[in-house]
Length: 171
Ligand code: S3P
Image 1 (tube, rainbow, N blue to C red):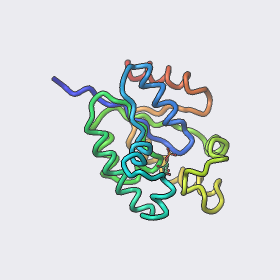
Image 2 (tube, rainbow, N blue to C red):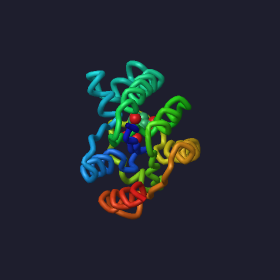
Image 3 (cartoon, protein in one colour):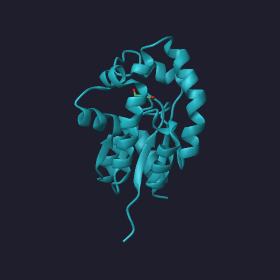
């Protein structure tokens, strides 16, 4: 029997990957895995601690290991971290395991949604808007190259986004 493809959410910080992923999984009666959440549970420490002690490279190694493990599942919904597309190995694993959905949002929305955030080390240094703009320039092409579908999350609430994803993946 053929494996049931996974549904994988990629996109920047503040795009709504975790919220939308949880709702999407419930809507389709599938299991949901949030890569950042799983990394923290496995490590027994939060993301700021991992960045402090192991650096970004240490976090990225844990992330790649987690993407290996999660993409080995079948028929689940996976929310990735915003930097998951940085490594070619991750992009290939994600593409090969199912339908990849890019949750697109604007830097303006990201600024609003991450305003009070203390759990994202990459936003704690320097000017947040400049960091987000630089990330967008680097990563938007990578999200697009990895994804089968692009869905905007800046113009409607999470339930509307889930409805659009369900319509488009079931086509
Ligand atoms: C990161 C995004 C975060 C988390 C880590 C690094 C990034 O995930 O993986 O702080 O490089 O964009 P979210 O996109 O869920 O915030």
